[in-house]
Length: 484
Ligand SMILES: *Cc1c(COP(=O)(O)O)cnc(C)c1O
Image 1 (cartoon, rainbow, N blue to C red):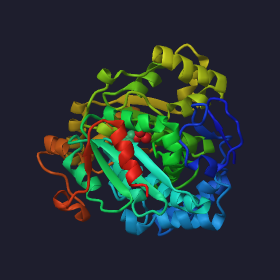
Image 2: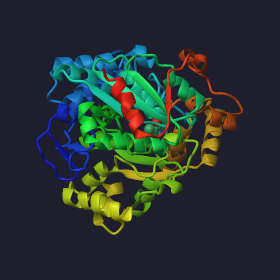
Image 3: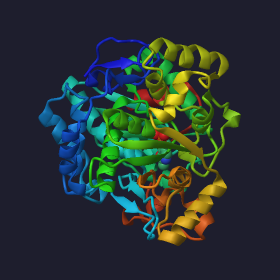
């Protein structure tokens, strides 16, 4: 399988050539040259392999799917990496991504399921991909005899998922900046209690944008970047997206008993990484009726799917919400879908995401015949949820089903209910556990959410974090000092 850029660069690249990369050199995003088609016989075989979540089933399924996109890692090695990543010991269940049925009332035409993607080490769905990435990075760096220093900025879930994936990995160091005092106490404790030598937490006196600006400034110093082998693990990384394709198949197999059935998925969305993996699964032939994009008050994506207008928000127009991992001003993976929507026209994609966005901050496909196909040919619809909706959904779900959902999953559930079709099971992706966003759960239910045993008392553990200002020279010196 070769990879190309959404902006036209077709230099032949295999999976491992882009594994450690962010953007393509022309500023586009990497996509496979084509989507391998899964025929009925293969789908049947995979259903059997996953075996409704029997031990080892998820790893076997992951190996099958990844193999279609990775031809430069020997099969036995790739299989071992999948088996090492997706274990019952790490995820707590053999199914890895078990479904919970919510609407069991007799006569309820459309069952709604929650698919648990947040039973990994940091209790958010980002573990599903990041845990594999950690193993892939360690493998590939060893093969090349290289090292990589991952520099990132986080306001919560991404940073902790990256650190738990890379801790103790040979050849990798993590330098993770976060705005001092702005993450929840639980999130701070998760990150700062890591004592691994290769993990470095940097609390910056500033806001998240200051952290991102520092990361950009360091990465823009190409001499420093090359000398210290600086890389990233952000959500545009193709390997992360690919890893996420697997759980769409696993969810489908659990919700259906025959491959003649269709399901829909609702995905709490921010950077469009998670739901883009659903798009890839659908393009491969997984029988998905609709892909429902759920946003919070930061409704960049909902606006697009309703009107065809994609409009990047200014910093001041980005709301701080109680589903903070969806607080985005632009959706960094969205270019991948638009490229497909436009019939893979790289020139047009380049003009929209290059010229038009940088000049006007928006583009409008409303009058383009391709836009109508987003729903009809690609299954995309959308909706939006607010803080009041989250509170109501968390309460309602607890009262009717005895299940506590986190704030992001609540956004998904709220929007899913607006897109139910009789006879088509709806799978809502659960993207985090409620304990990560306890304050809003207390606001909704008047009590603390349950805390998995392994996280009891983590706020009291010793912390390892370095605090600094926004001076780029200081963070460079810090990185240099720790790279020996
Ligand atoms: C990252 C994240 C999201 C958004 O996922 P995208 O891939 O950016 O669309 C939603 N919910 C939670 C809990 C997250 O951590």
